[in-house]
Length: 168
Image (cartoon, rainbow, N blue to C red; front, side, top):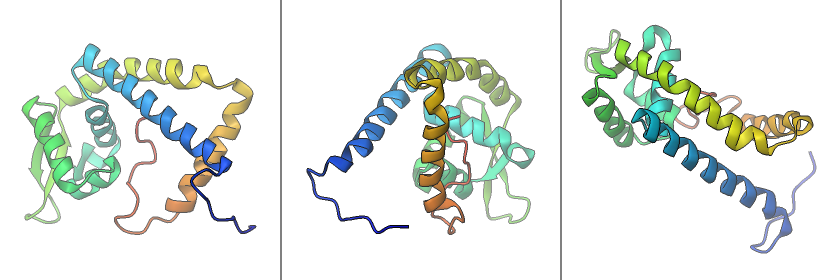
């Protein structure tokens, strides 16, 4: 692979990065607004439920969940506290380590996720997919997959989240 020249603040090669950051922020904000308005869930809460529903036995250690959400352990704890208060998740003792805690999805959590999924998918279609020509979707996927794989193809412990489906 060719060596990439160093960047400067006015380097025109920063334009794709800036566009990506701006687009991600706007899409996430709109997805969050829709989920809050229609289901009383933030986007992060929705993603936490999504990660849990895909986990073995619908439960995960708090540290793994924090990694999957790209949150600190304390941030994940606060998020799970809200979901526990709403009855969507419960804290259970870890089967392999009695000192550890796991977050486990409740049936109410599964129901809320099922209810919110059409809103989330509609938002992805409207705010993301509608802005990209169909023939460009493959290039966008390949580019984003390459970025992710370079950083997390063989994740170092604690470096990359456990879910490749965050948000989707």
